[in-house]
Length: 260
Image (tube, rainbow, N blue to C red):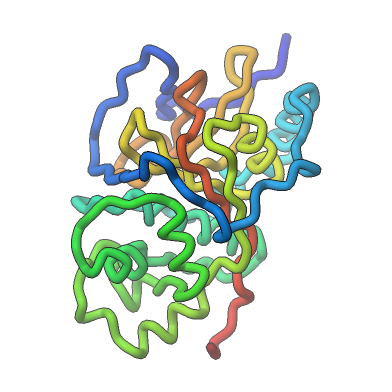
């Protein structure tokens, strides 16, 4: 029997021809011609994993429980809940940062998407896209939710103290992937680097976690920012539905320190 990835009983599988129930807010506003020049490194061609090796990589990672979803479940890291905000575009890169910090054996800290999204959008509930979120996070960082509630678009939290705290929670390096490049996306996920994925068909940005094998072909496991969606926030995209129009990946985080 051919290897197949395990799919949780509550993980929705969304592929070509599938309607996606809108159970929460979205907010992706991707420019017609996104410009990534000068803001991030492209995914290195030498790190591309040949398609002929994908099946073996996935089988081994699942056997050893070394997928990002395994790490997330082991740490009991909750998925994001953007509530009534249009901040999917910042929830996803912030969640990527949380996962990267886990992979670096840093303390589990739940981070506030609003602490980046609100000042980026001048404290308005507006949509955006992955690049502007990560650019801000590289320079300014994000606050833990104990300092700035996750969905609080509120200037009261924009304090000197919180700006100093946020500097402890920053991505250091990141890649931009070519739009709709399944080879770069799968190679990134197989190397356990989460990816913030923007989809025009959905008007939504989610977090790419795993490359998996479903019905004899490649698919990806995502994590959503909607309350009570999927299995612990996880679901599956396959076919053309998994090809992102925007894909950015923070690959390292600043080492944790109590001092800025």
